[in-house]
Length: 256
Image 1 (cartoon, one colour):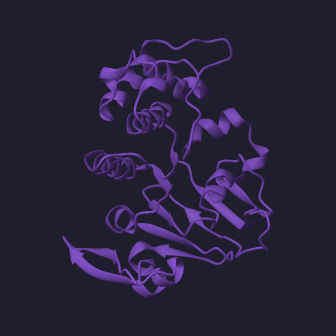
Image 2 (spheres, rainbow, N blue to C red):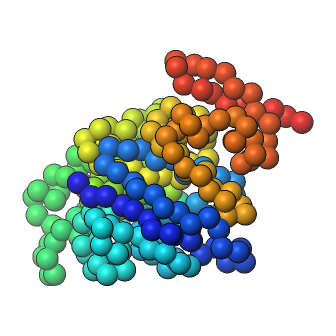
């Protein structure tokens, strides 16, 4: 399984001074949640880890090799990303979209074969969208498109799963289903690293948490150490009440 490391990484958030340098080891079997207010740089960090944005300084390493030294096809075989927002205007069916996940594994000019189709159909079934296989993607609801995006990542089958708000647009049942799926992926030896806005999803499903502040400060570690009410109140500038349910903390904002 692949590992992702950052070495003195400073992400490039326009108009912001250099923030705290990130030296993180993101290991197989871990489920990371990135928390922070709007504008803290969560999406920028995710895109930097995927090699889509340059760092201001420092580097990202995939299996100890600088990400910038690797070919995109090699990266895509080991690392995949679900974007927060996507342009789904291209006239492709749900199945055709999921099959895009197999492209890193195909040689130039190759087309998808039976095994590729089987993987795509299995992923779509797991995300409860296989019955929509022949529908055009741009005719689906936001939640259905989100589940297709996650199914495409599952079809790609990389070792490292990067997701920007994976529960975005999802109803409650599918939020739980997706979070359980990601935890199961980590249990099978993969790495999950995702941006979240819901503290309670992080508390229940994440093993590790990274807190990003708008001034560039950051801290990270095991979830039980990071999800302290005082730290979260400072992070969001919001008073919280904490209760416990089924052994996990539940954070409730207090109205002023």
